Amino acid sequence: MTDILTGIYNAIDPFRPLEPGDPAYVHCEAERGDANVLLDLGPEILRSNRYTCQLYSGHRGAGKSTELLRLKQDLEQKGCFVVYFAAVGEDGDIDAQDVQYTDILLSCTRHLLEELQNADPAPLISWFKERGQSLYDLGQTKVVMESLDVKTLAAQFAEITASIRAVPSQRSKIRDLVNPHTMTLVKALNAFIADAKAKLPPDKQHIVVIADNLDRIVPIHDDYGRSNHDEIFLDRSDQLQGLDCHLIYTVPISMVYSNRANDLKEVYGNPDLLPMVMVQKPDGQRHLPGIAKMQEVLVRRIQPFIAEVQLGRDIFENDDVVTQLCLASGGHVRELLLLMKEAMNRTEALPIPTVAVRRAIATTRDTYRRTVEKDQWRVLAKVAQTRSIDNDEPHRDLLFRRCLMEYRYFDDEGTMQCWYDAHPLIKAIPEFQQAKAALATEAPPP
Image (cartoon, rainbow, N blue to C red; front, side, top):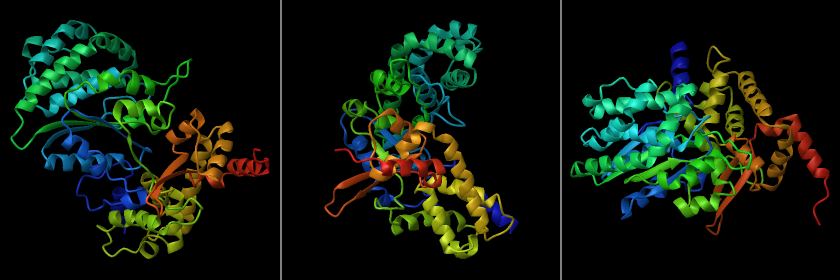
């Protein structure tokens, strides 16, 4: 039993994206408003006569990385050479708390060098040598400039990005050194990409760069109300789109719902968004197909250890607990796995006691209680009442922190409907209940 528990515990790792073809993958398009990354992003790359730059968004932990890895495989099978990397995260190049465009460009350069080993690095070597003495003075390079090749140059850029991420005292110095020369770096990188494309195998026609996890960049506002998201994705849009290849960047969901949304559309086209799995309808009734999909997420991960698993018998004490867990997740896959993991931490054997599930829910609910600021309870209560959001900073902040959730579905006339709700765990918090009661006593507007 201990081996089975350990196996299941690691199989439900909420922070590991699934690789393409993983039997644990569950198709949830129908309960996500027909969201399908292969159709939403792929054709633009395969059919366009120009280089494209697309944005992909959604709540953190909704499954974007898993979907982008599926897209990577699909594009590779259709004649693309795909360079995918998680720019932010445990193994990424970028600190989510402090990001500038320069960091993204350096990360792209590093990964293109690592993946396109057959290309001529001469333009990038020339650029690097011109910065070399200054980098040496900063302690960022100890390589003899005359010995640079693709591998050593990639290693040098990896050292630079690592310092930007991990050494705050060096971060601004490196940026100050590189910032005035980003245009020349883009030019050198494009010469490198052009040579790489000429040397691709006959079955490869396009180079595609997918920079994942940029949606984790924490929003920071200046005294004039502008955010670092504005600076990166709009002020620097020419540079973000400047590479001579197809590009996909993930973007924070709060940016998609900001007052700059139309600017994003004008620059990049409509961002593609991955919504939650709909486990409840706008009227509050349970949406059984969505609940079934969330149950399937658990079943697929457990089946290698219990082949004919029945969740309400083998894993939990009854089916009602399974449903309660799926509803508590709000249709957010990572939340479901986190709740399951928290419940497993409170048991020594299967089935998981109901009290352990309730404790897991209570613990997670308390985390949300501490996340919400005093003046945001009314905002949450109003969204829960109207199923709509306002285009302002409080709503964007709550979207970014996953306190507000977005759902999509097609109505009987085939029209896409988007609606919003407070996270289900928030609804039982006393502060939310008080805000809801206060809202109910207010006179409706004339």
